[in-house]
Length: 83
Image (cartoon, rainbow, N blue to C red; front, top):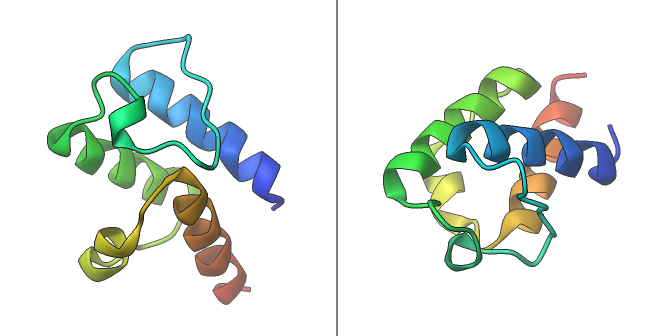
């Protein structure tokens, strides 16, 4: 799956979890850039991503994420490792 496809699917997840159809994610975005992306919703976003992409992410991996682009790369690595 390309990074563009992962980003598109993540955007759908963010829109659903945060109930905001206007969200357009970019790789450089952080929680400070997205209204409603707080610690509680962060957990919901990660769980939704795990379900959508059929991956499992550790707490240590989550803590190392600095922006949406890091999350996209992590998802791609996890999906590649399953093949």
